[in-house]
Every structure is written in structure tokens, then in C-alpha cells.
Length: 146
Image (cartoon, rainbow, N blue to C red; front, side, top):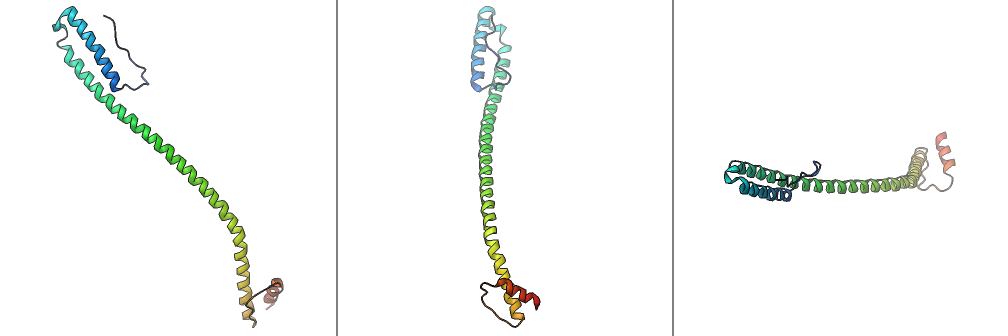
């Protein structure tokens, strides 16, 4: 009698189909033993082998389910990583635009602040100007002298 089924690499997971293939080969070996030595030779062994094959089938099915879950989780991780990278790119674009706007409107805000201070200074000094045109420097200097 020759050894008729093979053991896959330990890194490979055994599948349900592998268990069925092994069971078929073991069945052929049982047939050979029965032909050579009679039914009595395998009567005690056959239920034990069948039970082990059933357990192996169950474990292989569980392994296949776990492998499917792993593949789904890896796909989810790739998608989330991609989403995170996209959000980072969007945040960088936002920061660039925000920086530009701060430069642009920060100057405007500073100018408005200066105008407000000048108005207040001129109001306190007895002069009320609603609009300041060209000579902002002279007016602020005037306010400091008050």
C-alpha cells in the first residue's frame, strides 16, 4: 500500500475541498485494506478517522471564513488609509488657502483696526473723521501726540 495523499505546505491553509479530497483518498485506502485483510481490520479505525475528518472539515470551514474576514478587513484598511490620505491632502489645500486668505485679509483686518483706532483717537481728541483717505501716517502721528 502506498501513501496516497499529500500534506500541503504548512503555510497554506487547508480548505474544505482539501479535506474532501483527503477523505476520498483515505476511503480508497480503506477499500484496499478491506480487500486485503477484511472488514474486521478497519472496523475500529474507520469511525475514528471519520470523526477526525469531520473535525478537520469544520476547522477548515472556520479557517475559510476567517480568511474571508481578513481579506475584507484588509480592503477596509486600504480604503480607510486612502480616505485618510485624501483628507490630509484636503487639509493641506485648506491650510494653503487659509494662509493665503490670512495674508490677504489679515492685511485688510489690520488696516481696519488702524482705521478704528484712528477714529477713536480723533474722536477723543475732539475731531470726528468718518473716512481716512491718504494721510493715515500723519493722522496717527497726530493722535500719538495727543
